[in-house]
Structure formats: structure tokens, C-alpha cells
Length: 269
Image 1 (cartoon, rainbow, N blue to C red):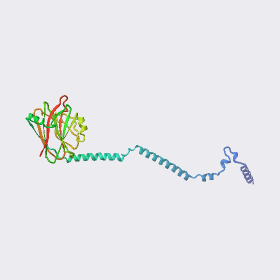
Image 2 (image 1 turned 60 degrees about the vertical axis):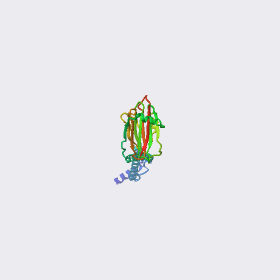
Image 3 (image 1 turned 180 degrees about the horizontal axis):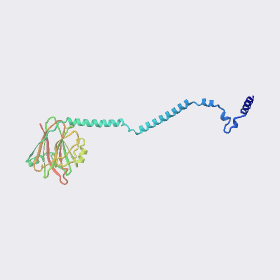
Image 4 (image 1 turned 90 degrees about the horizontal axis):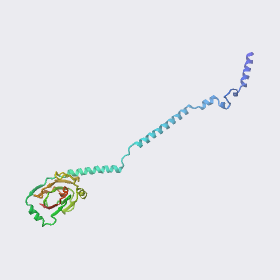
């Protein structure tokens, strides 16, 4: 009986208690039961959201790295640049092939004669056979090959002093049968005037150290100083094929003296 009374009294006290009796706890904070709170906490959703966020961060990082790699990668050559490189390589190859197809040139046949006075007297009566090659000048005689002949011949002499002489052959197709003369005031001017014919660079004329850059131009006789004031200088050369001879009378080494030149060029069968 006492137990029942004690139990009833305890229940009565418990029923009289409220959440407000405990500091820090309010009814608003206790609206949901702990069970409801546990049910609303979905751990799987939190894991999925965390994983999605990590995937997004990783995707952004990959995109940033790819962008940086594209910026640092060297630009590929444009199609035009590649075409120019290919054209340049093709031109070099074509030039090498043309040079390889050129047959070797035989040396000229040369001789001298003591009939200096006789040659000068004869050439004085012929038009354009006596010329003055001024100091620093180079005179080039262009002689094209012709079907009616098989070789080219030359003779020349000078008054008082020597002159440089050399022969080159241009393999370019012949466009005219006329023998023409070109005079340049210096080797630089000659390069500009004869760019298509293959310029001859400056060198030591006493050593015959002239060189040419045109792939179609071949050297037959380097430019040497000839004692044309003492003996007649003469020679001939058989046609190696179609082309144009370049006979050079070089006074570029002379600083003070002009040279009077007597010369003639003719064909032989």
C-alpha cells in the first residue's frame, strides 16, 4: 500500500515538471523528437553531395590544367609557311638536279702570237673592235651558241698594260643570236646587271679566284691577268651544248689606268 502511494506521488511530481524547468532547453528546440531528427538525417545524401562536389572540383582542375597546356604548347606552322618551306626545298632540289644534268666542260684551247702589230692594224679597220675598258670596269661579251657552228674563237691585245680575262658558260636557253657587250663600273654593278646570268663575285684576279652563284653558270676559264700588251692572246672552245658564252675583260683591279683593248670573237665549224 505504501508502494502504491509512493508511486502515485512520484508520477504526480513528474507530470508537474515541464521543459521550462531546465535552463537552456525550450519547447521550440524540442518540437521534433530525437527520432524525427534521426530520420531526417540522410547520410547517403550527404555522401553523394560530397562526392559530386569533389568531382566538380576535379573537373575544374583538369580544365584549368588543359587550358594552361594549350597556352604553353607551341603553335603549329600555318599552311602557307609549310608551303613556303616545301617550295624552298623543292627549288633547292630542282637546282641540284639541273646542276647534276650539266655535262662537265672541257678546258679551252689557248695559244699566243707575236703578231701584235698586225692584229691591231687589222682590228682598227673593223667596227667596235677597239674599245676602252676604263679603270675599275669589267666588260662582258655575251656570245650565244648557234646551230651553224661548233666552236667559239677569240683574239685580243692591249696597248701598254695587261688586262684580266676569263670565260664562263650559261646553260640557260638561248633567246637571241646577237653578240652583245655589257660594261659595268664595278663588280657590284655587274652583279645587279647580270643577276639572271649569274653574278661573279670579287676576288684576287692574279690567282683566278673568281666564283659564281648562278646554278646555270659554269666556269671554263677563271679570270687571270693576261700579258696581252706583249703577245696576242687567242683561243677556242667547243660548244658543250646550247647556251651563252660570257667572255670577261676585267680591269677592276686597276685604280688609275684605262686599257685600250683590241678584240674579235667569231664562230668556227
